[in-house]
Length: 458
Image (tube, rainbow, N blue to C red; front, side, top):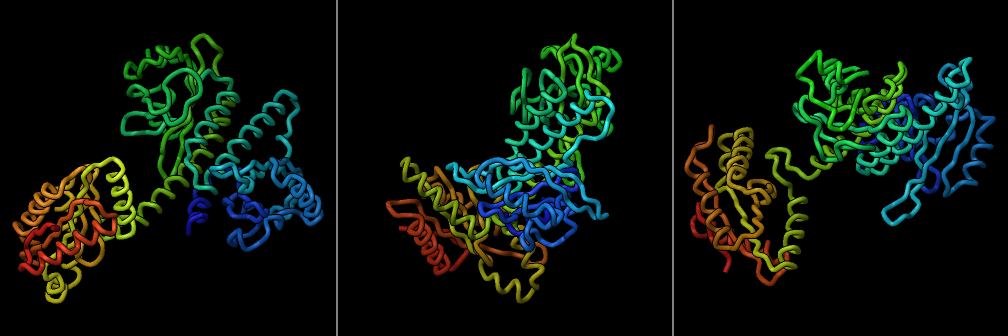
């Protein structure tokens, strides 16, 4: 996991009653959510202690031997854990395989749940509870794998729709992401909109109630719901007669909903359907929150915090990629290097706070000129770079001239008039380093010519 990833995922996983963990190929614990740590009576980083410490001493040797026999296989182990109250809780450990892109064994994802279903006098109810626990375990191991291996959450969406449809005996199931007033399908199993499609506004009647109340909702008859509220969209084209939906929460907001529907004419969902679906939605919230945290960490690692532009490292990665692509397809590519003139004087006379505002506003002005597909970066200090795919050197020089004029034409608040110099180079027969060096030498020529100028490479 990336630095901080365990902490973020662990906080998000407070929503989940299922204890989740991941083991590496040697059996060492590399990830655990808050529920796992609550079972284990510790708040230390999971790498610091052996994961079997959560088990009652009488069970450790037996479980260790059982897991050793299943080193590279899925496993199911029954044992006991010592709860914070000192109670020895019968527990089941379900381990699913974690594999790499080439199928190599990376370890296991583990879900820890109570070993027995809640006590009941009805055999049918006991069977339903056991079935529900099994479905939740399968989803939990998928979530643990996605969090531990930083894999896309789309795989979890697919598992959830399959399991929820089967558990609730539905005809179709969907994971929906709220996008403004619409719902985007991010997971689907059964007839109806496919992944990437959208539900008609204002959407499924059960989902509409979730959006309104923030709670699970069941609508037994869509026809009745539409009769009482004409604004509800018509779900009949897909043959839906009734549905149950639960909110997916991530980062203190409702991210979307999981929905299970039945065809018109079928019996309605029972009174337990909402609570059962809520368990799936809670696990989805864990997965979504972890994925969003990863995306935020990735964006922060690639972005200059002051200007919001690409940073030095991410720019050079993009430069190499674009040079490879342009060379392979024989397409033009140009690079503009830009540098604010006499910027040190701004910092020395106006202060660094004013200098920072000048840098941020410069980035904004450059961004207003860039096209979709261009890359703007702050390389450090007052130096910027502008990568223009599908652009010849003469056209890039014209773009650089527009940037020079835009910076010079309007004074900066607190700093007055600021100018910049630019060097432009088009891709020739060299590599990324050659293109960068030629643009940099052209920038030096613009500075030597008196600044506030644009020069192209020979």
